Every structure is written in C-alpha cells, then in structure tokens.
Amino acid sequence: MSRTTGAPPGAGDRASTDIVRLVRDLIPQRPRFLRGPRIPDGIRAPVIVTERLRLRPHRLADAETWYELQSDPAVVEHLSWPLRTRAESFVHLLNRTRHNRLEQKDDFLALAVVQGDHLIGDASLHLRTLDPGARRLEVGWVIGPKWQGKGYAAEAGLAMLRLAFDDLDAAVVEAHMTVGNAASKALAERLGFREVSNDGTTRIMALDAERFRELHAR
Image (cartoon, rainbow, N blue to C red; front, side):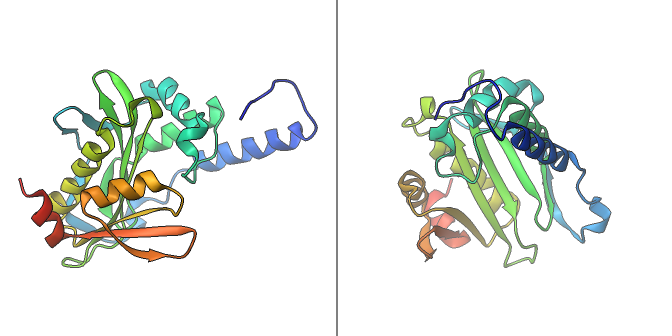
C-alpha cells in the first residue's frame, strides 16, 4: 500500500474523521472507583526478563519504532489495527502507556517487547473475569517482521502466560485470531493452546491451567 501527499478528493472528510478519532482516543477512561471490585492479587507495571527479551510498559520514547510497526501492512494484516499516520500512532502509543495494570474486570495490560535496545513488538493480557477458580484472560502478541522466525513471539507469549497463570491464578487463557492467521495459530499450538471455536472469521484457542503446568513446568 502506498501513500501520497496533497489533497485528493475527500481529504477534508478524512481529516475530520482523523481529528474525531484522535479526540475520542484522548478522552479519559471511566474513573477506576466506578469500575467495580479489584482482585487482591492484581499486578501493576510489571517488567519481565526472559532469556533474550525484556517486556516492560510502553514509553513515549518508543514513538518512532512504534510508528514503523503500525505503518507496516505486514504487521496489521491480521489485526484489528488500521494503518496509522504518525499522529494516530502517537495517540495509540499514549494510550498503550496507560494500559499498565490488571486489577479490575476488562483491564488491559500492554507491554513493549524489547530485544537489546530495540522495541520489536507488543504483548498483552486482557482480564475478562475475576472469579477465583474461573478467572479468564485473553493474550495477544505482535512481533515486527524483521524479528520474526527467531522464536521471540513464543518467548514473549510464554512470559505472558506465566504472568497469567502464576501471578494472576488464571483458570484459562484464550487467544483470539483471524482464521487466516496461520502463524498465530501455529504459535498458539506450540504454546499448548487448543481450538475451541471457529465461526469462519475468528478462531478462539484456549489453554487451561492444568495443561499449562504440564507443558511448561519450570
């Protein structure tokens, strides 16, 4: 996909839409005290060090590398993300820096995946239910094309699973992906996930705590 400069027909409408989107994304979320109960074993701003990677909260200093990822058609092909302009990418990163805890229902944690001094992707957890014994989270991962094929996605994914099962006592973790995303399906299977739903558009794969510990006991 290529981009051109200038003002093609409809550019004013698109500019207005972009402004609305940016303003919407900058609106503060509902205050936490209105969002219901917290879990006592919640986590805030974790930093995870693996054999080759460091997963840590996003920073605005990551803006240039984050834009490179978000403006690459190969990265967003199987994601719900659109190709973003620099301004849109910066706002998205700003929001990402705020997603740094898992304490209340629907909390979302996003961590930058860093190899050496380079941001190479993103790993996330979404806290879907709080009930002890039935706690459910959703995991996600994105690794830039330049760093694919080296096992980094599996390493980051396993780190997030350890956070979910060992620190948050999850009963099950799900991975949602488009049916055409063969790479994510293969990675999920490598980590132990099994397909539980497929509507022809979205595939849902799941991994429960017992199977996780059988496969990935330290």
